[in-house]
Image (cartoon, rainbow, N blue to C red; front, top):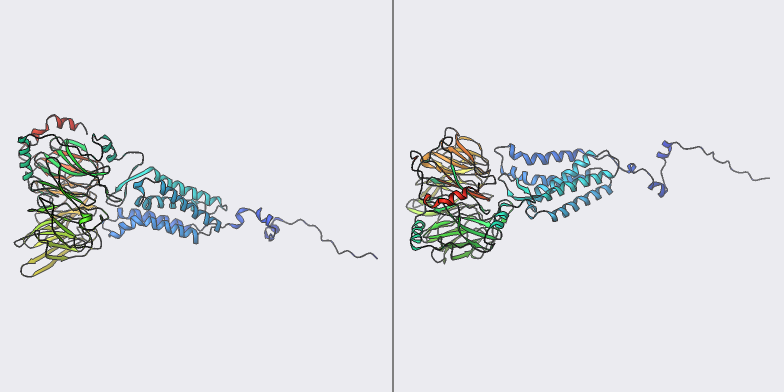
Length: 639
């Protein structure tokens, strides 16, 4: 009997739906399975929301006129935080396969590393934080969002490619610091900077000083007399208050616009000019050297240049000195951004003596460089170093440079020492992050102190109003205060008012007929001295500077964009009397007026204008006209 065979299962073909539901145990079969089977649609909306937030943080300060300083910080660092959150979304919330997550993360990190290494040096730091990283991560988020439902790993490759393109786009740029609203001052990478063009065209090589022509005895005597009584001797003028009390000008610029006399290239820096006779002095950066330069007032021709092998550069302000020279006791006193303090002979730039704040005060340069313009009181030169030691303010003998005294002060400030009269005493006012120090100029002892701590920086000057009150400005967002000081047998400080209607950053204000005129962040404003209330506010001049023409009831407003605006000093309304486009680049330097001449400069060029004087149409010439001649006509062709 034959064994019985078990029945054979019939071979019925499987449907495609049965195949999809059948688990695959064969590894080879698994490899041949469609790619999309293990992928899911991406959760795209968090990435889209983060992109919107990043854009909103960047543009919010431009839309909110009276925002707190934290808003500006959010604009600078918000996009970077958004980039970090995009990475967090991709790794933990995107629903991408883990191989995708790891591949995308590796591509992003590699892109940041490679592009960061290849970036222009000026783009490393804030440029990378504010531009390179956010653009690349934003492009990755856009790619992942648009391809969220593409069930293939090519979506990660495409998003990564977009990120690399975003990163690489910033390789085409270089930055010359930032604008006052913390936007990067960007230029094409292949375009040489104004400083590079100036150094390349200079007849003297970097590191060498141009020497003045020999002077005959009569010329030397004339210049020595001019240096003994300079017209504009120091930062912001004779009292460091930004006021020109000279002859009134014709304010009808439509009929009598300023006449350009000369225009010259200069090295970067935020110094202003000092003027004595037919000589101008300022400080500039020329490559790897910090230079004090003497120019002819009539023509703008360089007469001599004294250079020190020093260079300071920060991501906000860019390169160059921050302080303005001081003419006093027959000498020219300068302070560089790295901390070099020196007395030069204004005749030829010869170094009489020099000191170094890095050594004298045991201080490294602060974030934005040493910025105080030297103050000379009698035979003492006073400047600010800051820091935590007892050498916050230092004084030297003006003739020899020997130390005279040192005094503790607030550790941080970008303001300059300034003289004020308190009762029957002249005292040095030094405004820092801790408040106002009032020091005896002869000994450095603290006569009085007014405490007003500010968690930030102060880069503005106080203003002594009368025998008992002064204006104390502070950093961005905190406002301005009027204080009454009783400096009799007992020192008493009384706060009269504090206003947030005037919030200067590094823009000084002026005082005229009972009102303060200055910058309230990016807008110009007028505030009453008596109560601190706003009279008016308007005029988008950026982070510029202002100079009062007291006899003309007008102000020269130098906008951050390089325009010169003639503004009425009128508390009833903002009235522009005239406007000219003077320069194109970022302008933070203080303007100067001497006689009928207006001097302006920025980090690229300097320009001299002639203003028409009121009631004297036939006598607008000044003593410097005699020196102009053919040189003035020749320099005007540089427009």
